[in-house]
Amino acid sequence: MRVVQISDLHLGHEDPTDPDHAAPNRLAWAHLERLVTGGFDALPAGEPWRVVVTGDLADLGFRDPTEYPRIAAFFRGLPTRSAAVASVHLVPGNHDAGNFPSSLTDWPVNADRLAAWAEAFGPDRFSFAADGLRLLGCNSQVWGSGLAAEAEQEAWLREELDQAERAGEKVALFQHAPLFLREPDERRTGRELYWCPEPAARDRVLALLDRPCVAAVCNGHVHRWRERRVGPTLFRWCPAVSGTHTDADYFPGDGEPHLHVLPTIETTPGGGLRFGHASSPLVTTVRYA
Image 1 (cartoon, one colour):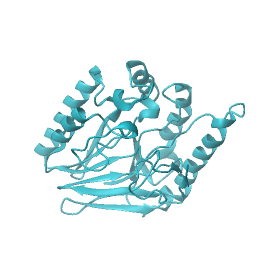
Image 2: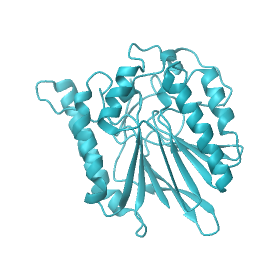
Image 3: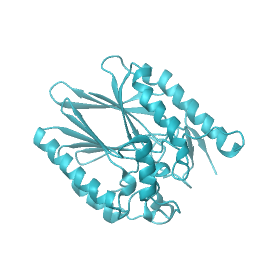
């Protein structure tokens, strides 16, 4: 199996009567088109790729789900359009399903936002296994929410991990938000509360993932590329397709803010995994306050 991750598309309406959003939305759609023609189609030839999209498909989906139909249609048609793509797997981000209750924003995840996502895209989590690798996608936005969806997802994740262990599979987990910025036991304040689930939820998820079978945890949200290994697990941040990034006054000051890559995972003969990152035709623009 071959897997490529993209994240943080921030797609929306190109409405000329709304110039504040029309220009960045036009750029975001152009970046996605360029990624398909100059990115996916330029990936190494061979078995088609499983594309995982880790959230923020829409820019304002949390308050305007009319952004969703065009996005959903694009990804439904992608395997037909591109011979490089075998399938597409989606999970929501905070701009889709809403934010963590602890994030100090006024657009928290709730049942209505989850329902709007489900109506447009289907389930907010996924499991796909082949060639000794199990891909798991979670809705990171429900961690710490107290919603019924959180308990359901936690039980589902535990069962999926148990199944992977019984099958002798490796696991790569995909979700929008990172579980931590610097250290697994960190405590965050102020702006940093925006980026990760609150500590109690984070600790429960990390405890679930503390298994030899978990090879990678892959997220978006922070709009930059980074890899870091903690014990046997590789934690990866995926840069934003939208192509924009602000300075550390807003985004966490770590990783590679200028670099856009396509993180990849490939199974190898004998049951191994090869982690890499393919070159991307996109350029990230860093804005400084």
